Image (cartoon, rainbow, N blue to C red):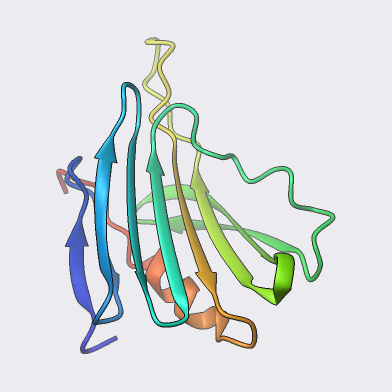
Length: 133
C-alpha cells in the first residue's frame, strides 16, 4: 500500500487505492456514487439512503461475511464470486442520523478479476475514512 494514493469523495470521505486507477463521481438527488477502475479492479462507493445493505448475496458461490469496525464505525463485510468468477468484496456501513428518519448509509464494493487477490479489496475497504475526521 505504500505507493497507493488517497482519493476523496465529494462528501469528504476518503480511501486509499492502487495507483493508475481512473474515476469520477456523480451526485444524484439523494446519493453520491463514486467509481474508480483500472487493470483487474473496479471500485464503487454508494453514499446514500438506498446504498445496498449486502443482504442478498448468501447464495452466491464462495460467500462469506464478517463484522468489522472501520474508522470507528460498524461495517458488514461480504465476499463472494460473481458471474464469470469475478471476486467481489464489499462493506456496508448501516449508519443513521438519530431521530431524523434519514439514513447516512454507505456501501463500498470492490470487484477483482477472476483469480485476483481478495486481500487487495479488503485493504481498500479498511483504508476508508469518513469525512470530517
